Image (tube, rainbow over all chains, first blue to last red; front, top):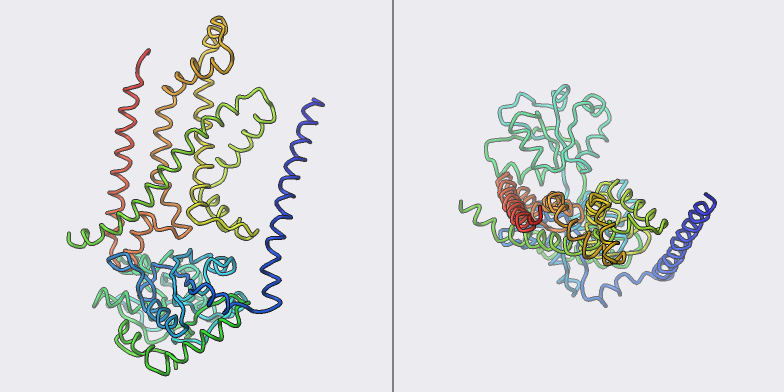
Length: 280
Length: 213
């Protein structure tokens, strides 16, 4: 019995030693980049030195960023990022990320920016820097073409689909008066396609989605759906950067301004949406 | 039909990622699981306890969480693994735990008389394990291992969580783009072909090892 106890103690001790040892090692590793960032913001110099910046995106988010028939990443935001890179004089690389962990991917340095129909929200402002907005977005309500739902008030008692963790969800929750009435009938979906499918099949009665994504799906099924006049408010799309990367933010803003001024952004918008929806 | 043909090239590139994870996991987890199974029956108590703890840890938590931990968990404490490496590591450690249990039960199912007979023949412990016990164990553990391997084929789909474009994630990106569920059906057929191949392979293997019964 005594021997057993001694052995257990020994095991615990060695485990603690190993874990403790690891701990100090990581702290040292952590310190160096931290120091560099508090002393001076070298984010833009670092990018120039690397020769490229890495855009993190969900590659299943048409029309902003997705895979075409040849498995290439394409989309509105992809074209914008490429144009911005041209203006900055560096290359751009695209890295698919798990959207739920975008902040971790950014903070760890896996990616340099999030450029993927990213809505500016108060919560996100505490986690990342934003460039100036480049698109105004609206959270709209989609129903079947033959639906009797015509206003937000009609949604009470109906089943409403929404993408979990999306800015549409934030917008609905921000509309507290309506939210109180419909919160028990909200169904969270992993993605908008499943929600739209469920709507088509009659499992739910409405879907709240941002207009850009909504228009994309509605255009794939002409005559199937319609948008309500009322919406859940407007918001901005912007590019997200690490909180510390102020210098890179300034450069990127400059590039975006140039693209808006010289018509590059308008050209990209017309290519993907058939109209100019750039926020000037 | 044209649509399915259009899907195939990217589905095949997803399949390559899936197969790579599948084979690398098998190659590393099979021997590791066997060693761990033997270690669980070791006379050295701390080793035995450690293996018990290990199996409890890796069999007792969802593989999905282990994947997240290997990538994002380690990232937050400053250790950044490539996403593929994190995926391989989580799969190998997880599957080794399951396989260790299969090998342990296999070893324990060999009657005591075999050890006594080996002792009488003057074989030492290592010789007994290598020449007498393990060959019999392998015959017995084939069916449960076949089970695990089929599970592995399907579990590879979990690495979508690390944004690695394996077969099912590729299918999902197509579904997002085209708004039709056909890519999921194509992916299901791919998985059925893979599990079918594994099933046939183990059937052949079991019949091949079906001697001295």
